[in-house]
Length: 130
Image (cartoon, helix red, strand yellow):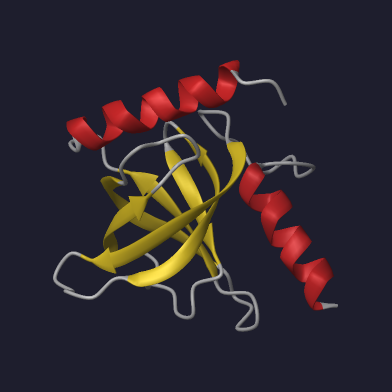
């Protein structure tokens, strides 16, 4: 049952199979290390980047999740990247399943440097063979 819930959460986050989920940007599935922290926190919480697009990301596997509406800083190391990327965002979705902690982040437009690097990562994902 937990596997089915996790798979459902992942499908919803990717916008697959649900007509009520509309995204401005395509998301690309990845498995990469990630960490997040609220803007005032000193210690990051671990997680895994499950998908990413120019507008946001989906993080799973964290022992705790931020509250919906929280401003966070994500530190992600996308496949092929030499250095981690820090990007600011707002939590727009949080899993309601305590056994499957996960959350969705919408990147903040004003974080120009982080967004430029994210767009480059997404461009490489688009061009890479599946």
